[in-house]
Length: 559
Ligand code: ADP
Ligand code: MG
Image (tube, rainbow, N blue to C red; front, side, top):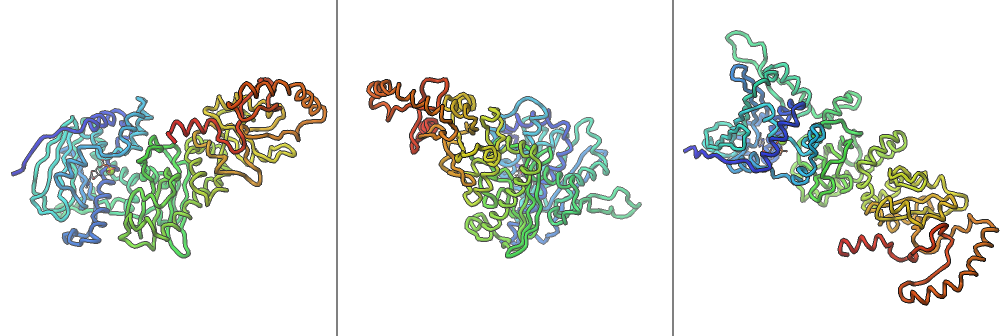
């Protein structure tokens, strides 16, 4: 009883398939990378599960991935002896998209092929990318530990439906056969397939096996391993080329472009571990969604343990991609153990310092690169200032702001640069928070600062509202909001100006009294000010009051 049935793809899958076939055309060779990466994941999962149930090995612990092709039949087959799937799992994993961020993903598509291809890459092209080159796909699989008659065959032409039936499969694991579309014959070549495997899968730590091209008459076909099968991060830095670093990044980050920067470092001491961490060139579309996954994979002694191990990086560094491989953690480490593990805390703390060190160097020596980093990731780095008190000084130096110096919306002024430009006798760093950059730069509160030539930082991101309360000083200089309390710019005023101001104040005394009587309870005080040069009046709050724009923000979020 094969129990064959025909089922429809989920609507999103159909949409994604259409998109891929149209946008991924210039990257179509990645179908092989995706199949090999799934095979490798499946073997990793089996190895992990077998730690607690060795019967899953079924007396075959020689893990490998095979790639075969058949010129006559126009097929390519990728098979593995990994964990496999049962019928329900095939339906759930191959016929649906269960990823978080799916909605954001579809919303952020632009219709521009190149941009969308990058988005699809970030989203994870996965299994469906095979339909870019194939018009018919058969997947045969059997879960480790199940019996031979519990095999499952899935088959689809990528047109919205698939069939699924039970079959015999003697060996555990999964076999995927692609029937190539018209015109895709370039992939029916041993040398082309080997080239793609080396490009994308050299560092997959499992042997990828192909039949030798030259076979001797009458003998059993010979096989060979075509990838290097060694973990990139275990090799010495000086033996790894820039291109290898970049290719590995594309593999871990599912990105088509190169990273902005990376660090590769072997830590020794109380604990031994290796870091290979990348800063992407672009912020992922779903960076600010709640479900955004951390991008660092945890390995223990080169065995893959888990993806998105959020304990390995502080939350604000969730955009970092890469690998941390520990020599000391136990192989059966679980998410629960990671929650409160001193070794992990130490790894996180050092990895964070390394990343911030990389950024500090970049800010110092490659300012253009840092500017591009800031425009992509500045907002999360502001989260960092609020979140990571231990590294506050470093994070404060990494912040960039708009200022009255250029009035440009580009955030490119560091606190250090501000301090170096401070006027003689100026002892505060002045800033103004508003709902938008335009509102900030046109605020009447700035008039007196402009007149005196004193620079003011212009802040308009929601998180900037917390700057003053989180960072009260920088290098001994107080951070002072220009909309709070008395601002003493007297130092920059000469005697003659002071006399004139006194005269104005005397003349206006009557007006102040009348205003106080009229406004009564509506205000706390009415004062003569030297802050304004052309506007007649402005509202300020006292030193310990809440900024009006923060107040509105808190009200809007229901606090
Ligand atoms: P991803 O690998 O990012 O999860 P894919 O589209 O590549 O997305 O694969 C979807 C799911 O299908 C995988 O998560 C896995 O559960 C299942 N799968 C795909 N290929 C295999 C395989 N060779 N062995 C076992 N499961 C697989
Ligand atoms: Mg995959």
